[in-house]
Length: 150
Image (cartoon, rainbow, N blue to C red):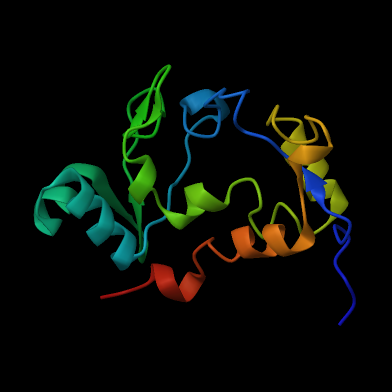
């Protein structure tokens, strides 16, 4: 198997930019896909039951589940100027951004994402993510199988 195009690493730094664009509705409506394990983890962090969590914060989209959004398309857990209110329990989709498999598939995909995210390509050499770190982060993005459950 050949090495990916990003074998030399990629530059990304969220800290310092803290724009919140990926959590806010700036890019329009979207989905934060959830696994069953993630839903249970967020419910525990909020100190509510699983049923309370799903009734209050989750929507079913086809066969999958997503966090609900506010009317302005902000994530329900995004707090302007503060960030994620469930940061330590945030879903894998959030933990892995911007290294989603479809964002790192080709250099053009990465460049397209860079046009939206000010943290991509910025910073000094200490902000460079190695191939190993990128692959580890991308692996946090939930698989289609993980997102489907009864």
